[in-house]
Image (cartoon, rainbow over all chains, first blue to last red; front, side):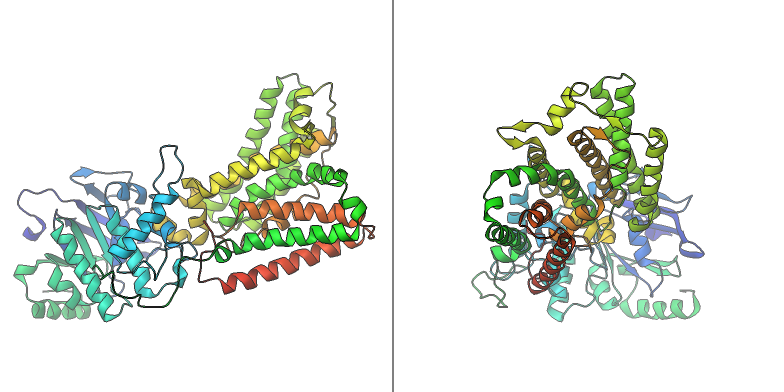
Amino acid sequence: MSVHEKSGQTPVIELRKVSKTFGEVRSLSEVDFAVYPGEIVGLLGDNGAGKSTLVKTVMGYHAPDQGGEIFFNGNRIDDWSTARARSLGIETVYQERALCEKQPIWRNMFMGREPRTKWGLLDVKRMRSEAARLMSQHMGFTSAAVHPDNVVTTMSGGEKQGVAITRALYFDAKLVILDEPTMGLSLSETKKTLDFVEGIKKAGKSAIFIDHNIFHVYPVVDRLYVLDRGRVAGVYRKSEITMDDLIARLYRVARSGSID
Amino acid sequence: MSTDVQSPAKNNRVAPPSIMRRYGSQIGIIGVGIAMWLGFVIAAPTVFLDPDIYAAFAQTTPLFAIIALALTFVVITGEIDLSFPSIMALGTAIFCLMAKAGMPHWLALLAGFATGALCGWINGALISRLNIPSLVITIGTSFLYRGVELILMNGTGVPLTEENYPMEQALFTSTIYGIPVQSLWALLFAGLLWVLLNRTRFGAHVFLVGDNPTSARLMGINVVSVKTRAFMLVGVIAVFAGLMTSFVGFYFWPTTGDGFLLNTIASVFLGGTSVFGGTGSIVGSLVASYIIGAINAGIVSAGINAFYTQLCFGLVIVISVVLQTIIERRVRRQSITGR
C-alpha cells in the first residue's frame, strides 16, 4: 500500500506485523502501522476493533505477540515498555484518563516523571508551582478556582480530561496519542480538545487521534487507519477520500468485514 | 486555550485547601493523643507527672512503632503484611546463629537484615507478580518463616548478655542524655521514612500505586518493583525491631514477635492510613504507636484493673477510626494525602 510510505521519511513510530492475543481472543492481527513526523493519524473503527489495544501496544503497556516488531525513529526496539516509550517522547491521553483520583493535581501532573532537586529528592515546590502555572495557562482555570493541592476526585469530567491533556503536553512529547479524548465532554470542552489537536500539528509534532465521532476526526487528520476486528481494513490519505466516501466504507466494513 | 485572567472564577470553589483540610487526620490523631494524656494526668497525677512512666514507654513503644512506620508504606500501596512478627524472629535467629558460630558481629547483623530483605522480597514478589492477595499469602509466609526459624533454633533461645554483645547492647538499649535509645531510633526512622515517603520518587509511586495501579502502570510506573520494595522495607525494619526486642530482654526467644501483630497494625490504621490504599501518613503512625503504647502503661498506672486495657484499646481504635472516616468524607473534596 503506497499510502504507508511518505517520501524518504522515517516514521516516528512503526509497528510491523504486530499481533496481540488475550487468551482465546485475538485483539490485533498482523497490524502494520506507522506515524511520520508532523503527521496527525486518525484511527477509526467500531467498538472492539482493537483501537485501544493498538494504543496500549504502542505505549508498551501490552507486549506484542512473538513476531511483531516495534520501531522508534527507524530503530527496532525489543525492550519496549511504558517507561521507555515515555522517555523517548511518547505521551498518551488515555480513554480511561489514567489519573490517581485521591491524589492532588500536582502529583497527577507529574506521575511517573517527577522532577527532582540536585539532592535527588522530589522537587515538590516546583511540581506545585508548575501545576498551578499549567492549570491557569493551558487548562483555562483561573488560579482562584482550582488549586494544585485539590484532589482530582473533586473535579468535573472536563477538568479531569484537562489534567490528562495538559500532562501529555507538558513533557514536550514528539508523539501525542489521544484515545477518545472527547468522550463525555461538553461542547465547549470538545472544541477546546480539538483545538489542542490542531495545536500539536502547528507545533510540528505527531499525533494519533482516536474518536468514535468521524466528524471530529476527519477535519484534523492527515491520514486515516480503519481497523476492523483487529485488522487494518484500510489506510487513506485525507486528500484521497471524502468524508461521505469514508462513512460509506465504514458502514460497509462493519456489515461485511470488507471495506472495498 | 488561554483564559482571560481578568474574568471572575467560573465557580465558587475556594482554594487553597485549608490547613485543617490538608492535615485534618494528622491534627486529629495528635488531638486524640493529647486528650488521652490529659485524661491520664487527671486520673493519676502522681504517676503521670513522674518522668519514670515516660521512660518506660519510651523503651517499649519503639519496638513496634518502627515496624508500624515501615508497614505504613505497604498499607498505602493497598496491601498488608501479617508475616512481620515471624520475620522479626527469623532475622534475629540468623544473627544469633552466626554470632554464636564466631562470625564478626557486624557480618551477623548484616546477614540478619539481609534475611529480612529476602523475606520481604518473597512476600512482595508473590503478591505483585502473581497478584495473590497479600492478606492470604502473608498468613502463609508467616507460618513459613516461623517454621524455618523454629527448626533452625531447634526451639531453644539464646542469651544476649552485655559482656558477649557490648556493641549490640549499646546500639539497642543504651540511654543518651537520659533518653532511651529505642525512642531515638524511632524518631530517626520516622524522619528518614517521612523523607522517603514524601520526598522521593519511590514514595510518590507508593501513593500512586495504592491509589490506582492501572493508572500507575499506564503512566510507566513499575508497580511490581514499588510493591516489592515496600515489603522489603518492612522485612528489614522488622529484623531491626526483632533485634532490639531481644536485646532489651537480654535473651532471644524463639517466640519473638508474638504479640506484635495487632499493636502494630492498629497503630497504622489509628494513624489515619487508609485500608483502601493511596493515602496515609508517617506522622500519624508514629503518634498512634505512642498512643497505643501509653494506653497500656496508663491504664495500669491509673489504678484501673488491667482487664480494662483491651476494652480501652478497642474504644480508642474504634472511635478514632470512625471519626477519621467521617472527617475524611467531609473533606473528600480536598487533598487527603496532605503534602
